[in-house]
Amino acid sequence: MHPFRTALHDELHARPSIYFNEPAHIYHLTLLECSDALDSIVETLDDLAADALQGLVSLDGYATKWERHTEFLSLTMVVPKQAHAEFWPPLPESLAALIRGHEELLIECSQVLVESAEEWGGSTGRYGFRDPCGSQVGAGDAVIWSDFRLTPDGVNRILLVNHNLNAYRLGRMVRRLLEIETYRMMASLTLPVAKDVARELRNYERKLTELSDQNAHSSSDARQILKSISDLSSRIVRLTARTRQRFSATEAYAQIVFERIAELRESHVLGRQRLGVFIERRFRPTVRYCSATHQRMERVKESVANLGELLQTRVQVEVEEQNGAILHSLNERATTQIKIQKAVEGLSIIAISYYLLSLLKLLYEGARSLGLDLSPRDASLYAAPVVVLVLGTIIRRIRKAQRE
Image (cartoon, rainbow, N blue to C red):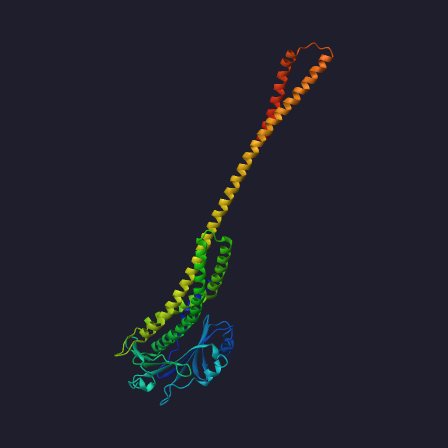
């Protein structure tokens, strides 16, 4: 059996929902991971959770589920509603004590009140909602209400009126609602980052325009422009590396939100806007803005790279022109040297001829003084072949040396 066979198969059963019956209060908290700051919460909840990613425990007798994700930790507690209890009781003390000291990491807090159809009074006003959205979900087996306004304590309240959902379907329905809120907030974390990136990109685009204009003028210093482009490219690459993970996470979280909304199978409640429509119309612009900023950053990076390539081509052409001028100068110099060499060669032949004839004259005069009877005409006839032979040999050796 493959060593990963069991673990991979058990992924089908990972992160199950909490199943319960109405009426109940569901408290859901999402805390951002920050340098393993949430390890103490997990250790307090479950001593056996050293390597686990989720667990279901009992906290003060209430079913509490924790799930650890890459960027956040979620806590969900189900508290049965007591008869004649208030609609929105505060966070249980056991859950509040668990996150005490980590309040600055709390990114999402939702409270879901699950009422039965019999307890539902037919008025959202008695639950404190102002102009709420409403949807029938699960093929009309439940109705969800929320105005998506935070309480002074920062809690988002959702009312689910159950008509015909059993404990299993009810648990999954509540889980979808909580995941929509959790992943919506996690995706929205990129919005401040995208705004900061947009401000930086405006400066980069302005600088890119200036460098493009400078590159268009042949009289500008190519080396200085290339240095500026290299500096701009390094800053954009650093910005991309710093924000790529955040933009990718937003895309993934938004996809989950839209999938969970589709899984609700909403239908209209008379005179009310559907929850899914309300969320999509106000959340999708955030996703699009983040996506557009990410694409804008990638386009600026590509434009800087293209400008760098154009400038490198320009520099290469200039270098080739300089090399051509140098080669032309070397060619002219070589031609001049060849002419000089030919002139020197001619002068050398004349000088050698002069010295050779002078030597032959001395030999002739010496022979006459020793009594040799030889006329000048005969001496010239005998000396001419020697002179020609010697000069030919010298010229041949000079030409051979030049060729080598």
